[in-house]
Length: 505
Ligand code: KIV
Ligand code: ZN
Image 1 (cartoon, rainbow, N blue to C red):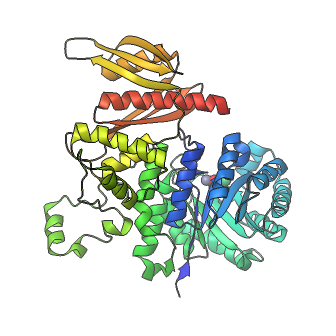
Image 2 (cartoon, rainbow, N blue to C red):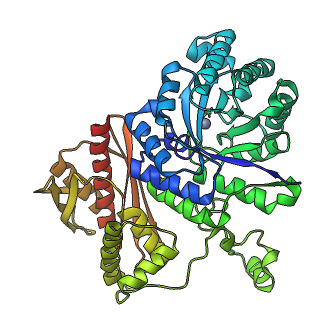
Image 3 (cartoon, rainbow, N blue to C red):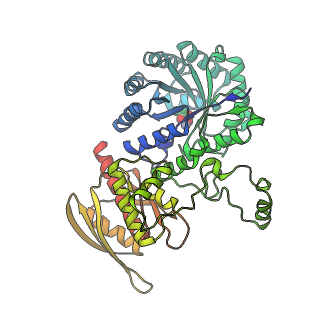
């Protein structure tokens, strides 16, 4: 009989640790609601001790999401665990995920602890966490570079102290698939009491092996896979939710496994996380990349026309990726707009619906036809709950081959209009410099990306930028049919986020 693989999603914890990602509470809640819809088994909602806003976000998620397990991370430190317990106080299915390093490299150089000391701390941490909840997950950080017999002792101690899930992180993404699955098999055979707990795998993608390692481990005893949407996470990220779910579904007979993931929500989940985090997805990314289902070569197209199975192992509609042919236009009424928004799976509050409808009308006026990609972009980009300390009132740009670009911007700063002008190396540089002068903010532009959200010369341009201010990296985004306006909006969005992070620090 096929075995269920539990999906533990860490988009909001490990995913959020990726540089430049700073989600506010409303954005975290939106992602958590989507993870609920896609049916993950556990949502790792944050690391409550790390900041007040992480703590608050966990509390909000716990209030809203009642039929999923909600996990939070805590170092094997009493204060971390108490704060984790407090954040989960009202959860219907709380999980405390506590961890300590097990490798000599970490213990010796980073934590200056002996193996025995680490083992004692692990025991104490699990026992303390059990006072708050029955479900405690224990992770031995850097497990794959640890001594296997010491690892067995540490996991045994965790089980004796009450852990119900043992996680085996490949923290630095170093393990090879065969080596990692041998470790899982070794633990399954050598840790006393392991048959009564769940073995979880948490693989990083530094060598591009996170998904392969996780999948092979299921054939050697792992029953839970830790994933992040679009594979985001520390450095090269985690195993991607959509790849794991689709591998298990596409090869279910061979793997003898299933998950409860609602595959039809994959595209929407990926797109939401992409927009809210500003981490774009490469066009050739498996499952959710723009080209994942495109057939370019003549011989492939010929085969596809004769029979789809010649070159297609999955169907785009399986992951909810097929856009509707239906388009809305400037004559479409509110009723048609509301209907399409709800068909796309968005549940908007009345005031947001109003705001989105106004933006839709604006864009329809400029662009004519508004398709599903445009609608998604409007909702995902324009309804962000970022307090607008700086708001664009107007801008004017002069640029050409034989003149130096100049930009004038009018910015509303806390209700007062401030105008500023600047030269620059191109219209975007000039605009950003004019904004710097108006807002008196000093930031460094780290990354700038622009993408058309759909096809055609009049497509909406979505700009994502990352700026840094005093070592904090912040993402900003903006959309418009005019790419200079989209760039200005993304820059102001980033500045507004910096203002928010200053008030939350
Ligand atoms: O990669 C890692 O080791 C982690 C642990 C906290 C589980 O994220
Ligand atoms: Zn990790």
